[in-house]
Length: 121
Image 1: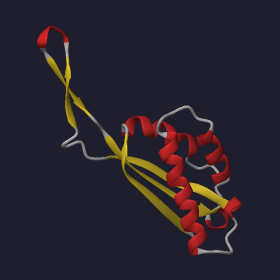
Image 2 (image 1 turned 180 degrees about the vertical axis):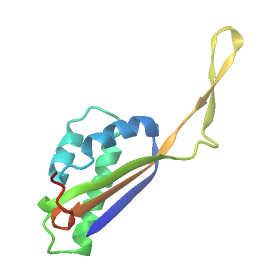
Image 3 (image 1 turned 60 degrees about the vertical axis):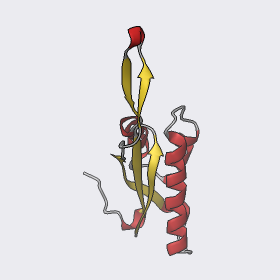
């Protein structure tokens, strides 16, 4: 069984959030949560909240499911909208630089290990 959770319009660059997502993809949810708790990145907190939401969705769908059996099967970050989030920053000699404030959409899918095929080579 695969369950997903989506966090939309998260403030921050999707490129920087992908660095954090790459660390938890394929890990058991306990290890993924521990990694996110001790990671010193701004994107770690919203990603942890989306991961907790995915775990809660899995519990809600199947109450007898053991949380320790869940694995982060898919995790990816897409870019969010930037329209209307452009700002002007003062620059030297009377100039102005354009600043684009980025946002991202975070998607995390968790599944139980029993459903995963055996990937031994």
